[in-house]
Length: 611
Image 1 (spheres, rainbow, N blue to C red):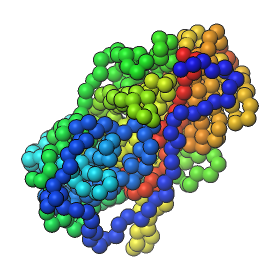
Image 2 (image 1 turned 180 degrees about the horizontal axis):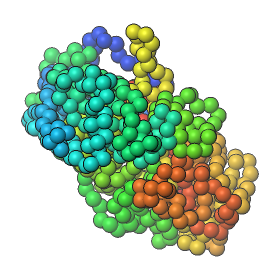
Image 3 (image 1 turned 90 degrees about the vertical axis):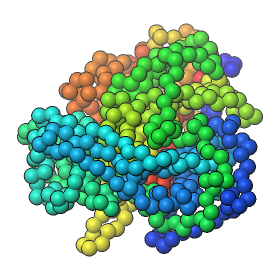
Image 4 (image 1 turned 90 degrees about the horizontal axis):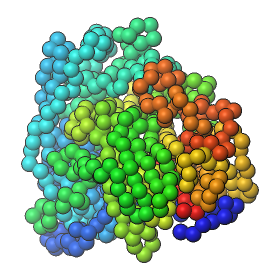
């Protein structure tokens, strides 16, 4: 790629995000899925073996994640063999990825019953998802036909849900003493979920560090519910129960409930089509319902890039990247993803004004989680590198893919993947690197977090849909090194002219806006295009600030943190080493289907020149 003069009008090579209006969920009536029967007509297996995962630069990728996932689920669940299994589940989980060659890969898993052993007095809870099964399908996007199908044999999956610590035992007893909790549990078997406690939660007008949500999963034999208790721990560590709610379903449309609304086909495709190859199964359920994980070498070269990476601390995988032998990022990672519930609809506010109008760690809505990206708190972390061969429209490239489920048990997240996923935040954090010097940070949320606690509001004896369920901000923090590690010059293009800010700044994106970081002594430049869904915070590197300070390492730094814009002061930035925060906003009401039927996707674009 040739050198471009630093005064040139910037160009963008990435694909812009698209907005989607939410549509109504299917009613309670049974729905039939049309399409030819492959059991009768046979299947066309050509193209399965060489299908690849779609990238952020492939046309309509975001549309597929937000719309096609629901349709692919319906096709899979309409096969009579899959339908019979899914309809008996009391907990379930779905996964989806769009592939080339017109293929969707989709999976559904869950179990018809659960066994819970132990208790508070025993000092532990052990859980077994009994006879868990996984159904994998490859769906032709043009014809809505299953072209491959695999159903696993029933398998018991066990995990330790909780093991006693002095403080958690005291908090759990305090919760269970509450009459509202006892009434909601009603002598049924249950087991607890502790998220990362108060460290990452602001709720009910209380700053993080002072409020702790604790979830009890309650086995009602033919269904599983969640009882959510909030502890105010400002006065003492054990805390006072300030709120209790019972939630009947973990996502708005669980796969087993979706199956119950569908009329199965007359014939199964199970014997008529091939099995779904391991390589084309969804990465989150690739083998026995757990993650597909293939750690790349600690250092590798591909598509003109040299990549070195460190395993996740609290900010996800940390990547150092050079392009054509010159440095680009001394570090790029994701210190936090914000998941907020019960916010008022956003106007023209910045994300700082919207989430934190008083500029303090108290969320303006009902509840906020500052998600942590670590193997210790859900994992599993890096999943692997996906190759993108060059084609007629795109250069070659690759994706470094990782996944974090804040609050799930153990890196393999067997509880989450068995359907016990209320309260657990599911974040895919990926970076696409391309041979033409384009980088795309990609974030995808599978759901559900605490969304179903806020998606319905009670009005007398009726439930009405709440128009604002969940709002999110994904952050990417970059130590930019445009061809040099000695510091960068900074310019902003507002669509008409360039300016050079002297001190740290916070910029809300507008169409046509670009922030550029250049080598003061060379031609290398890093362009960061912004639009209405993005913001940037540019500050000098400083000790005691994220991302240099890892999350949860220093309690005082953690409790004081709420938004990267809080780090802005009067420090000069021209020619200095900088931390650049890219903020990507996502709104759940703008996706095509509710949680459990869709994925929320957003991404940024970074363009290099002069390398």
